[in-house]
Image (cartoon, rainbow, N blue to C red; front, top):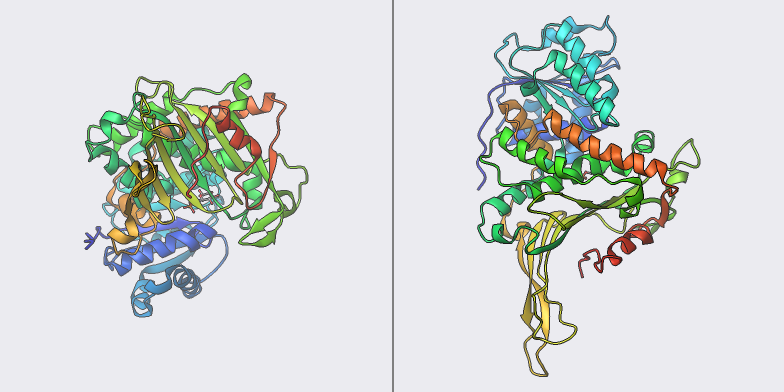
Length: 488
Ligand code: BG6
């Protein structure tokens, strides 16, 4: 049975408080922590945005959002208590004449209380908001600022944001969020690796053939065409979520679970990533979906989904053969793959071990083991082992999983990643948030790849919606005598 330890009373101000992230994730996450008794009633939640709105209207917006996100766990009685701590302030954070005194009057006048400023806005105004918080005298010692991804669009813009935010907040007050690190199964990756002696002796180039990391989505743009067309799959998913998964898979054991210990190990992995030069561009595949199917129904292609620009070269799919150039991983390819409008929604990390050195069971017997970590949905850890298929008629070998399914083992509601991360922010625990160098190291690698793409003649290859990406993604593996793992 999970035990929830209440956090101390806190104030949180959400910039972009009426936006998509607030409605889909942040407000429901706070509501669920309230339901579990983790948020003390003297806490204060303030949504802010530019549009004028009173507290009642904001509570109504929040109620609709939380009810929609809650399903079975919606509790109308608990809501009437929760909404008492919800407030709204109209602020254009980029306007020097904005009404900061009105916001201040809603905050608890206690500089010792954790005060969280959550920037759920476009990154190009992060610095303006931080400066305005500083000018309003609200950046107390106990204040924290939360930066949503993407932090910039390249190394230079990420540095400019980090510098600007750093004028107001010290590094220990900056929580750069990657919601993948709040997912239960992603945290389990660390437990699996560092609380089980079984894997460590095998966890290197000595026994691992290659690693596959796939984050496949079957949805399309979901009304975010403007943002997405400027970003693409590389910036939207690889720079952050996929590289974080790679770091947790490849990093050395940290000395402790403390924030800087984990972050230091992750940064070492990012710094060991081999740069992809223009002549290695064939190690990567870019794709863009065309019209196809979603759940058996026809859907538009990417270009038709964009309201304006035609001929966009933005990639909605990426596959990359990456290398971690260090002692542990020399020669082990890390294949990364992510895309929109693929055949299904699933995120997996597949560790494929080397085959047995000598096959005594005859031709056609695949003597490899795979550890498949299903991050979502149907969260599970499966270790595929070879076994003898029972019965007469020759010795037949079959690969079957030792199956640890989360749903069967724990009868729990799965908390959303933001629930854990928000409580960590209030507690001041930085371990699941990125340090400045980490974000910048990831951008440095991604910038190299974008440059390689720019000088190459290859644009994105098309793939029909509802498939597993362009043909070249399969070829990328095929050339190495490997294939993408697919659940049979
Ligand atoms: C976000 C991306 O960071 O992650 C989205 O901007 C993507 O494009 C989403 O859909 C995926 O998150 P999850 O938790 O649904 O896997």
